[in-house]
Amino acid sequence: MSTFKAPKGTYDLIPPDSAKYLAVREAIAAPLRNSGYGYIETPGFENVELFARGVGESTDIVTKEMYAFETKGGDMLALRPEGTASVLRAALEANLHKAGNLPVKLWYSGSYYRYERPQKGRYRHFSQVGAEAIGAEDPALDAELIILADQAYRSLGLSDFRILLNSLGDKECRPVYRAALQDFLRGLDLDEDTFRRAEINPLRVLDDKRESVQKQLTGAPLLRDYLCDACKTYHEEVRELITAAGVAFEDDAKLVRGLDYYTRTTFEFVHDGLGSQSAVGGGGRYDGLSEMIGGPALPSVGWALGVDRTVLALEAEGIELNIPASTSVFAVPLGEEARRVLFAKVTELRKVGIAADFSYGAKGLKGAMKNANRSGARYTVVAGERDLAEGVVQLKDMDSGEQTAIGVNEIVAELESRLG
Image 1 (tube, rainbow, N blue to C red):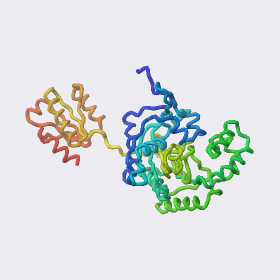
Image 2 (cartoon, rainbow, N blue to C red):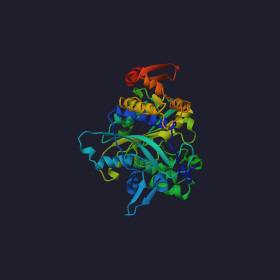
Image 3 (spheres, one colour):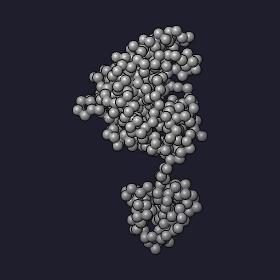
Image 4 (cartoon, rainbow, N blue to C red):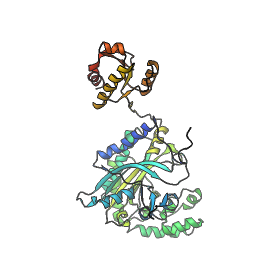
């Protein structure tokens, strides 16, 4: 056994379970690729200031959870705790917003890092698929992203999830609400850190999960009562578009989300089968983030869906994904000449797109057939010296057990025909 183990709060993805994670990533990405979103990949670490400015200095992510370090050259970097700030930074740096085709629609998949207390559904290293639409203020864009996420989850067979929806207002109406909320919070019995947070960003207090805080928030002013006419109209159009698409949602006046950059539309996907870590994804509009990190005004909207929690949601609903076997054909050579011939045929099969594997290690027939069974292959090709002397191999259907002799030079065409 190795001396080393995966760091606390992390996990290894290994076969066969890793196939589920790949299938989930593909299912989430598929509707995005079908809707004009191009793939982007950013570094695993960025300048600390990118997240401090964008995510918010008062957030738990920045103050408690970010893995920050100083390089040998004196740069202050951080492992990325979320994807939006990095993607927007990359889009600005590459001047994608100047190409004349707004919004810039991007999707991404990767690992993210937060120093949190590990528990089921909450890891220090986790995986997300995200989407961002940069440079357009349009309720249809907000609705599109919510609909695409719903489509992704339903394509996996999930049904026990809910979409929570709210509006956080904009720079016109939120300051008025902010002042009213601060007045309310100053009258509560809160600890010093929470009072300090209330002065910096009072909306973050609404997102506090501690029961001692939540009990005191009864009767807190609600942002929906302070929305300006423009924000009310915008939010109502988002709601109407989602409803027209047949996507069910719940209005949640207390939904804030944990990042400072959100404006107007905000939403969360929750699954009631996951216990305390019920959020499987979420997002919203972030019209001022570009300016926060030194770019021009670029109203934008996006989301990130957790791959890890989506897998847990599938397990909670008892859903088994239909994942095809990684191998369609398994070759079993008996003897040196058969090894040479079948290895060449396996290479040919792979070239025409048939997933094929080979019995390595000079195993006997019994051991090699066990490997063939474990591989999940539909067909096994077996050949010995006598078979090759007759110019044939034995093709075995692993489902029916039927075995047929076919010509060595007919292997590829025969399997192409049978596997379609």
